[in-house]
Image 1 (cartoon, rainbow, N blue to C red):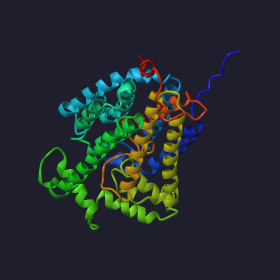
Image 2: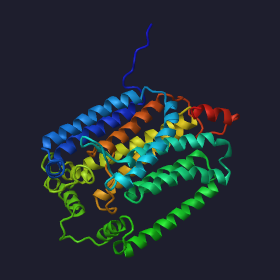
Image 3: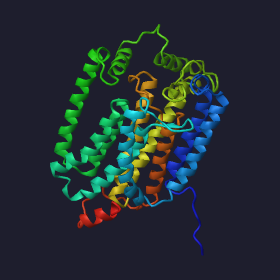
Image 4: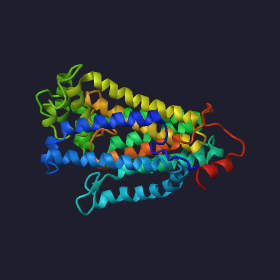
Length: 391
């Protein structure tokens, strides 16, 4: 008897959460893409929304395909994706515009978005391959090297993305079993550098010309000392949140979304609050929290360490970026330019994050129902590590 093909393979909870969030995305983008479509895309709101709809439908197909590929294939592919990401990030400095690379036919993408997924899967592979020497301080620094390379290439044009990637990978190292004493020491250094950098950018960022330091400094100052009389994106986002209240003003009734050029991506959460209220906004936050919880649950159930690390890294990346976007939209954090995963419009970001969901769903197919130890140390780890890394 032939085995029946399960199209929606993988963890059912992940599929449900994904469909709910992407459904919210279609409603929110339809309400917010108007001004940007006219002023930036030279298109009509209907055409811009249709483009977003096509991208979402294509990602459904991509997710289904990815969920049926053995996840160990991603280990082999990550090596080449990592090197390709480095090349693309270098090209941005020479032929790109800010953080974008432009292709013939008007197509564009952000190499940093590809680098997010490539680095996490590559790092999972590297941890597995060095599993016998994780207590050695030299292994800790060796594993940090590819993370530092990617983040240093991204930081000059997109500091917030570099920080998110670095933190997701650093948390992966903790889960991966590196020297804990060294890990906590490094965390202390990271916090100290972050505090010093925050103070430096606040005091001198807008007075020096180092990469985008003036932009970063201005954003910090505007966040700490907002001018309510200035018509900025962040001020309009705050007004949208205040107008929405708990139950919102109704879908399609946004005022501020029609005045903002970035309402459909960088501040879409604020417009969701304006139209649907804080009640729906809380539900959206809980959906991301549930998605992260599903990832942690998968970490405990995965049969192999490579799968565990991929799930931990991708889940952390998605939740971190979602939390930062939501914090920016309500004024809790300075402006970062981060999209809301699965909801904001945008080709490269949306495709990459939905690709991450495909990987998560794929790994969820290879789980043990019995609760397994978290990243256990096993005998003959070297042989097993090579098998898991796709060697």
